[in-house]
Amino acid sequence: MAVASEDLRHAESAVFETADALGFRIVQKLYYDVPRCYFYIVSFRDDDGRPGFVQIDIMNDGPGIGRYLLKTEALLSRRRRFRCFWIPSVPMEACYLLIKKVIKKKLLPEHEQKLRDLLREDTHAVESLLVDVFGADNLSIIREIIDGGGAEEKGPLIRQLNRALFVRFSLLKPHRMLLKGAWFFRRVIKRIMSPTGLVVVLVSPDGGGKSTLAEMLLTRLRYAFRNTTRIHWRPYLLPPPRRLLSPLTWSEPEQPNYDPHGRPSDGKMSSVLRFSYYCADYILGYAPKVLWPKIRAHLIVMERYYYDFLIDTRRYRLNISQKLPWLVLRGIPGPDLLFLITAEPEVIHARKQEIGMDEIIRQLDVIQELSGKIPNAHVIRADQPLDQEVAQIEEIILGTLQRRLTRRTGL
Image (cartoon, rainbow, N blue to C red; front, side):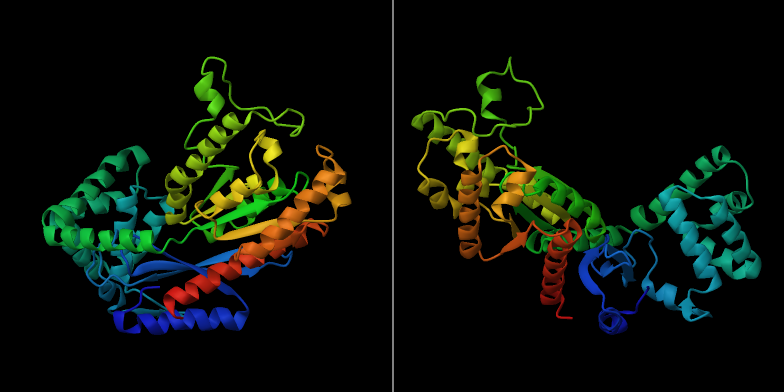
């Protein structure tokens, strides 16, 4: 939707009010190449209870510095009625469509047919506007492209029009490029200060279903974000210690550990050094491996993370004091949401028998202790149908996004 500057706040309020009336949630506001061109992501539940998403685009480019060059006022001027919507005038629709396809360097047959229909509807007005944008020298090229022909013939012509737009709107209008650069810099700062991604950590004993949950969340919530990232245990900015100590015998990927408590712990000095190395990875690797995807609007789902040291140091063959991981915890960057997966010990043991019942009970006690000490922790029961378990986590994630967006926009 192209919206005039004076109507922008009203249009945004209308989107929020409509979503609220339908029982939908607005969970994200993500920007395009200029600050007032963005889209809202609206979430809902389909008939099967799965999350669905609708994207509502809003464009307000007063200076005309966006990717498609035209000012918003130009799109709104001489608008015409189409059913229950307003759409651009015939020449503006033709011009905008051609600009968009030339910049993307892809003009499909249906676009050619649309341009021919618009040209027939008001030939003089359409050609006059195309000359203003592309230049009189390129009108014959435009006619040749619209009249049909093979893709091989049109490719060089489309590239020529693309160069014409670059010369006319970039080289000959340096102030436009400076203004666009300033807007871009502002957008970068805003994205760094207010990331639109979300960091989620899943913690449970073996058999809690972390991998299954991670896969389902990344799939089902994919379109609430620009992309997704999955991390197992630690950021891995630093390579595994064994790769440093024995590079010639190191092989990847590592084999799954089906007997996590089967090997004896290392000595105290070796354990402290290795634990320190892992902590360095959590601290140094957070910015490039976790924070950067969060700034880029990713959903980052991590399994275990640092919290596994609080639950099970024996898995990592660490001979250290149980108090040490708790002391270091406050220096480790935390997630936005921590999900602690619990169930009756018998349920977890029935799924995986890699550790004994007594050990499972001990780990569940630690998880319960974690739930009372970490503010953004949520306890999720694994002894319920999987769809309900996933839906419960999704509701917390989507509710968190909604509250964050409400706080940032004031809408």
